[in-house]
Image (cartoon, rainbow, N blue to C red):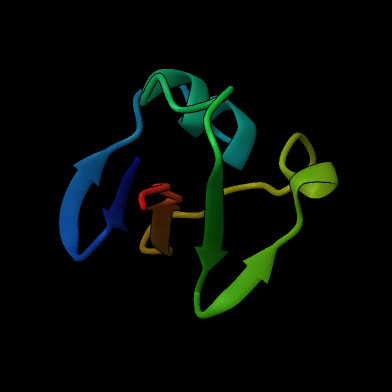
Length: 66
């Protein structure tokens, strides 16, 4: 399925939920925030948040510094 990931076209393969997409991107355990079609998806909803063709996904990784 084709989605837009961080502004670029992306084929999700068999990833049909936000959780599965993050596993595919190898970001599942990291500190990230996810938006689907301009709406924040809370971490506890990732496993049930289904992706649809054409969805616009933003994955933002939190980076610490000092």
